[in-house]
Every structure is written in C-alpha cells, then in structure tokens.
Length: 117
Image 1: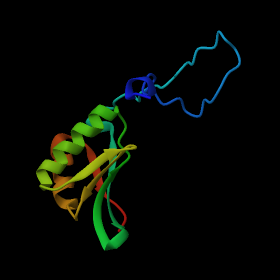
Image 2: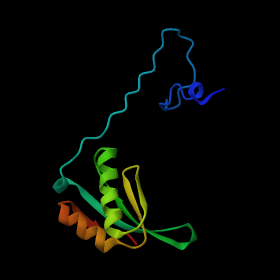
Image 3: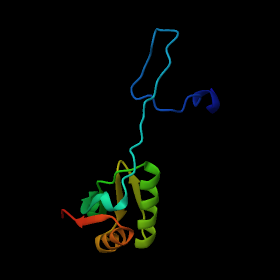
Image 4: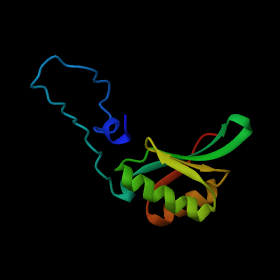
C-alpha cells in the first residue's frame, strides 16, 4: 500500500476507533488556548536532572498557542546557544541556563521566578 493511501487522514482522532453509523462525521473540537499578555504570565524556571545525570532548564506555566511557545523556545535556545524543545506548555533547554533565561524573560516582559532544584 502506498504512503498516499495510508496517510489519507493524518489528523489524530483522540481514541476514536469505529462507528457503525454511515452518516457519522468526526468532530474534532480542539481549541487553542488564548495568549495572555507577557506581563500577566507567571512563568517558573526550573532546573531538572534527566537520565544519565543530564541537567536541563525547564520553563513552565506558559499560557498561549503552541506557535508562540515554539517561538519563545527558539529565542531562548538561540540566546543560550544550545538545543532543546518546546511542547506540552513547557520549554526544555539543555544545560543549566537559568540566569540567562530568567534575564531574557524579564527583559521581554514576563513575570518569571526561579523555582525548584
């Protein structure tokens, strides 16, 4: 079977398996969160240890669209000069860069604090 036929409906269907109703139409009610202004967001900057004793800087409590989360993550990763990811409302940056991240977040207008480890 070719890839075109397999990927006919690439949307994730959140657990939907089968319906016997021939008139059934899947209704995907995904709603993106609204963006709060930077000065109303209360971000936390954590230091976490991952497997293999790797240290990461994690920014939590971001409220907004996934597009804005990825843009902020890209900016922070470029400032720190390292890799990372932005998903599930968190930005994970490789290494201990809490001070750089905190300074940039405050400079952009976020309310941010160091938390945890």
